[in-house]
Amino acid sequence: MYDYHYIRNINEYFKPRTPAAALKAVESNLTPIEGLVYTAGNIGPLSEEPLDYDSIERVLAGENLDIDTNLFLLDIFEKLIKHEDPEIALFAAESINAIENRYNKKIEKLQELLSQVVDAESYRNLARLFFELALINQSSITIKNFYLKEAYGCYRTLEHENELTREDTLQAVRILLELKLFEHARKVVRNQNPGREDIDLLILEAEISFAEGTISKVFPVMAELSLMTERLDEVTLELLSHWLAV
Image (cartoon, rainbow, N blue to C red):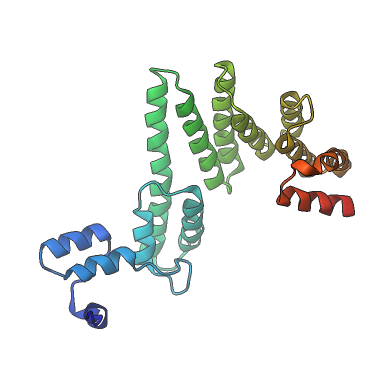
């Protein structure tokens, strides 16, 4: 039976910092196979003090990190960039650059592809990358808005190519919301929902008015939704109950 010998005596072995390094260490007989398993699977809470820099670095090394993970890592790095230890501050700065460079490389690859052929799915992926870069650059309004406008431009291209889907429209409106172009966003939503039957677009219209600060425009939309309760999911019913109870 396995008696956790490796974990109990971990300081006796070479300690690789990444799974790739652990694999090489196992192949070179510098550590037992348990070292690879331990290194690949042993990641604690990244934001828990004291910070585990090795675990943070290993997560950062992962391929195709989603936006939530990137934002979580950036929150850590933005704090570390002011660290009194210059090596830690440098590690944080380089890590931020690494995350942004990954986006830039993917964007360049898609732009090169799109310069040769018009592909709707590539434009959607490009819009997503620009939007995520906008979220990553929340601290700089100028840079954030630049990426938002680039993302919106992708949806305009899809519209021009008659490839704009309902989901594309929803995302494009959310970009307009981020840009605080409320009247433009409202116009798009109403044009896409002439029959006033699309629940998601109605909710988005209410969200636009709320973000704009014109609360009086929210209640008429809620009144419309109250006439179609049999079509509403639980979350929307709770939203409706909140507004109609105010």
